[in-house]
Length: 316
Image (cartoon, rainbow, N blue to C red; front, side, top):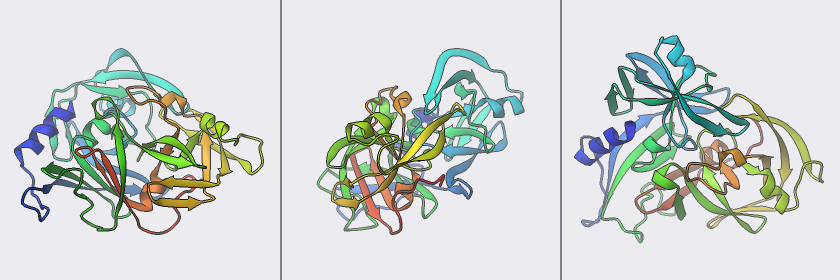
């Protein structure tokens, strides 16, 4: 798979670097990937290659594994092997296959004749695959959606008392929790004063609260201030109904937002692969309004507010 290949490249220091000032603390930039953004949905993707063909690959920290799409494999007439696994997401699950392309290139990683999981879905708008947490969370990952860039870093000797937010001396940070084998990253936030776990998910258009979590806070469909919000479409291509509701407050670390308007939907299908009790998803609306660093080395989440509306219940 992709992960070991990139790890060897990062460990060998093959990519250029910039370091922190302290002699015993070096925070080295290993790679920078330019992001493309689908304007209609705000979806971040990079151009990779499968068998020499350039394809769009969704950047999805909410996906536990890097996967190719069946639609692209069919377009390339790539043989598939059926597996017993199914991929779960909002809206249900879908079949999973496996394929062994001649070559796959994602960023600095190039692998040949390697088996990849293949998901039977996610073709719109023409994705060849998605880059998941197994690739993205191998090193410390900076996400700058507003700047259309991802950066990977290696931490050498920078302990938890050293801020890694090199772009902002006033950046905030909170503890980061990693799922098994770095298959997901989530943080603790507070909603209406209640502590809940939130998944950091670049694959989600907007942040949303799990239906059961909202119910525990006394917010439910049909209640005061709750309106129908259409549907959210998951990896299976199926729609799940969602509602929009006004909460009293949202807090992450020292950042507080009063009266946020958030979507609510059933996200229980995401609870797998070591990712448990997802009570909220922090989607691209939150990430566009912040510059963030997911430090797997320190297990810290750094974030700086850039301005503008933090949460949106629209499709972007």
